[in-house]
Image 1: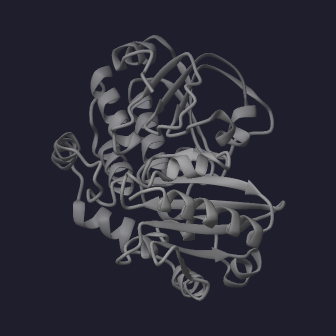
Image 2 (image 1 turned 30 degrees about the vertical axis):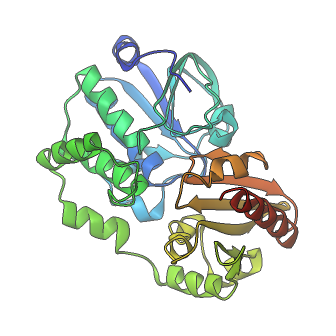
Length: 327
């Protein structure tokens, strides 16, 4: 998707307005949280009035990030703003309750890197090659002339490191490493923040992984792998939404597996599907789009109405069809 504006226009909009709400998608990951905090801190440093909302509130795991206390759940009474900033969110409904909490905004700004972004908003900047929205926010902060404080740098590092698999995924570019170097120069303690991001987990997450591995199955001659999480199992373990983050990589990293899928039963008769691919020939964004979802070529998801077993069978067939279409 081509952007219909440039970062300089968005930077000018930031300078010209005073009241902002910064939002991202429900079930936020590190890129979403780090990006919104970083931009909020930059705006506050410029003397702006800034509100930060997320449907699910802050992630427990990322409370160590400076400024995480800025994130609140959206209020029941809608509010007015000069500018509504939406980060890392491909469609407005993915904002959850945050969308309805904005009664009026003179300007909607959409910053994202998902190929499935619908292009909503007045000023839209979609950089699909960017490995993380955090990288886009870095460029915007630079374009606006805001200082790169240590607190902002920590949040941008968390955002970029999360979505690049700690600078390992194929979409990590030379520019990503240049930005990483600038963030370190601004004060990021790589060892400390990496330990918090990737090496510190509650015990229940390990219990959750054990339960998931008991459901593991391989299909399509071992080229697809999946596991599933019933509501009852999640309740028994006491697992929350953020505890599942990254567990699908256990499947994805298995030799011979091309596509991995994680099925999570939700309240209300729906199933959350996360999907990962090792090879762009196996485009999981296209597979998820068949079920109303989207994301990236190598990492996508969907929320599908139906029972866990039924959805699992439907999606695994779609994965098998996609794999078999390739030589």
